[in-house]
Length: 378
Ligand code: SF4
Ligand code: SF4
Image 1 (cartoon, rainbow, N blue to C red):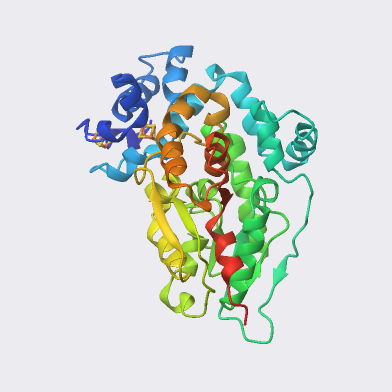
Image 2 (image 1 turned 60 degrees about the vertical axis):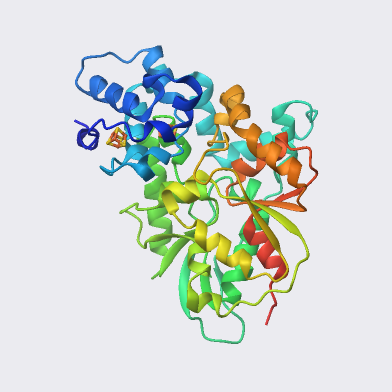
């Protein structure tokens, strides 16, 4: 039984917000169509086949439909359930890729090999932007020369040290300056989002259980903070974690925390990309903007339609490049017309995907990296 599916009253309000419905005009490729399919699979009226798998698999999991649904249908978890019903029919490459990427012991050596590939091919460009060096963080950081105002756990994730090591360093700098003691438990790993999205709910649960145990062993925590919004969207609301999850920008933008941070001016134009996971699930887009607005002289220009998917969608940019490029194109045109000094985005796969199509020459960073660069260290 999938009781959440029964919450859908089939009103169709979500259709206008769905990027795959907008591109195809096909009801089956809409949130309502996908929910109806999951219900039919669940009731045994349809058998899992390649066509059903394709319909569920083409969903970008942008969760725009969830954000606007008047019946509060939890579309993200519903889609993970649906994909677990058709997992055997999902493309083998997708199932292997999610398992590979969630195991840094496997993905790190492959990134090293990928760096030998020419940049003309997507795998070569991806590897060129990843770090193959393994830098193990300490398990505990304390603010120097003062009492900590609180204690948080920092979630690093599986791809964090590969694609977001600068952002992890920046998060530590900002949290310590804000007065937090930061625990970085050694036993943590992949959040399980990629496996859940590939229908492997068993392994996704085991990965979450390993994270629960790792953060539990770290002692009392006010919150578990994450930097990549794709991981954050999966961690958010997980009842099994020993502390509530919070997007790091949401925590840093709290009034009392922000009062402890000062920034040097930066004369730069910055294109701000707000990922769909940030807007539709974490809902901390205003926190990101408030933090960046604290940097004097920075010219901020938001790009894209707020809450819309850029096409990166986890592994979709690799698995569905045509769809991903179509969704990216308007954003790339906006960036190229703007010619910013920098593009900031809180999700590594969005940054890689946008940078891959952008000829503006702008630098692509996590907003935390820019904030840490401009931080007045006291
Ligand atoms: S998912 Fe929500 S918005 Fe979409 S049809 Fe169902 S009830 Fe309506
Ligand atoms: S998650 Fe995004 S792509 Fe999937 S059905 Fe909802 S709006 Fe459409």
